[in-house]
Length: 547
Image 1 (cartoon, rainbow, N blue to C red):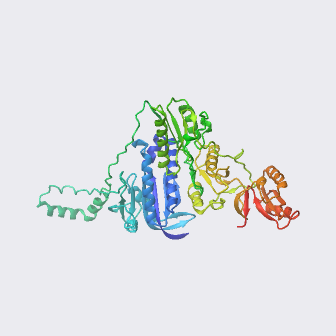
Image 2: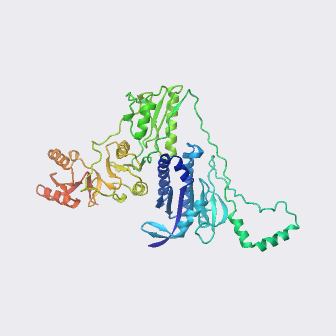
């Protein structure tokens, strides 16, 4: 165990038990979606989640400033999401932050710092943030936000009062208002004659200043007067419109962290595909939305349009006055959902009426089966072992993928592009959506490298992965032998495989080995029988080079 000073962040959902009691399935699905947002922001600001339980999240930050910035961004993002739900079904976090001395044990943090953060979270308003005096002192002159001093607060299981501050939340116009804390008036003081003051003072002294002070401070109202918030939802006048619901919240939204830029295609309407609309062919979206679109969109009357997003968001509408109105509304619906989730990817029209207008066609996919299980090559997942990723990508996997719910997968592209998700209804859906999204980014088929908690392909450690290996396309193998090598590798469906080559391009193989080292040694041994200066060029499905 070791001690350290850290900024501790504690959050949980207000009224969570009631939400679960009213609709357990819908609440759990939305919780997974909202947790994706909180986890993403925590990682963005350098935090680390060290404990979760139900709706609660505990995280540590090396900086109080970053912890408060993270909390503000989380609350603003979730406030926007909640506008889509009636007030009785809104899911809002309370957040508490303190700085304290904590003990680290097996990755978990213990101590008063953790307990105080949890108590401050309980003092926060719904959708609000409450911080300790130590945090306030650190951030007051560094962030353009304001605070309300609510004084010393008695909290459960903490022997001394905790001096706390409320953080001002942003108004609808983007400004930050100064919180106003209501101060109670002492009972009976409003109309008391002057001659009664000595008597009152004597009675108070006789009753005990300590008890009176305790009651006064514990009954001090700590609520912050929030600025009024009005949501204006402009709608287009149209005969009986049929609007799309939000993307099915049964799963955590797709997440990408890829060095590849977002594709910028030509406008879909300028290159229509002309295919008849079939829900089964729509890429990226959930299976539940496929079913919904197959029934409600396909059967709806014109004018109608459907927009989709690489991250799986959709927007559709029917019964509009004309196609232009339908296209505009569908795109706006889809983009609003994507923006609320924090993705930067743009929505595009997929269909107008029952005609597909999506410019890109289906994304490139590998041949079936997409997932092959082999106990000889499987090993526990670790974000540091995922090949070809940069450090930010590994950090995202560590904070978002590793603690995610099953079913979850990672699809990897030959240039280091990757897509992942968690909490899918089925492994098949997780696999399909990740391969489609990754393929769209990479422009070539990707592969599933991780399923839930294990790698399902051989992950080289003796040499550095540089890309995907295809023997038939390898320029270092003599042309007349490429086909034979590809055939032999295709037949070696279990264990570790390796390919070595010498100066004359003559290859050597190590097939169906029990481990990486055995495969590498066998490939080198086979190569030196036919060539000189042999070196390994492939291990499993990857090309490799020196570390």
